[in-house]
Length: 268
Image (tube, rainbow, N blue to C red; front, side, top):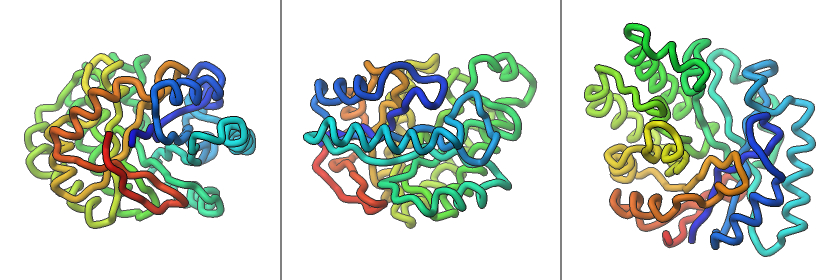
């Protein structure tokens, strides 16, 4: 089976097109299941240019309910992409714990007050030591995501590479910190996603790298697939390459989620 668990809506303020058209593309590309995981609106006031407002959240739920009624042949799962915001996650859980999500993707788009994957802030990467600082703090925060026990899927695991900028400490991270994080996530029955959106970014590479994905499989992480769609043409995009990467890493199964419970399916 092929599934796409990383699809956004225009409520996030930086995606285009009607949700119906995302579903139609998924059906056209033969996906067996999809999930919408738009950007979590909590904590209040955080990065409001790139996510739905709290007042939009009921509309998000209504959109998904309407899509399920309109496209009954395609399972459509209820998810969110949850940014980890240090010091403010209790506010997030207070709002999310009451919801019956199928899955939650954990992600990081900010290190401190630096939105490191924002192209409008690309010049800041040229500052001395910025690359090392971003990558090191990023994976330190990733550990908090894993230890929280609140999230199901690690989203675009090595997204700091988006602009093709790697730190001097990359080899050390790849040898020590990253394997330790993956082993920790594996003991918590988490999944990692193959996110094909990296092919549409300056780095021109899927998230995560082949080496990291192989370590994830060896560490026992489950696998999901995601296009990180922000346009109706993107659901399932480049999944032929995602399949190649999954098989290279040794994965034979993909994981679906229902009410936060994972189930394996033969990949492909």
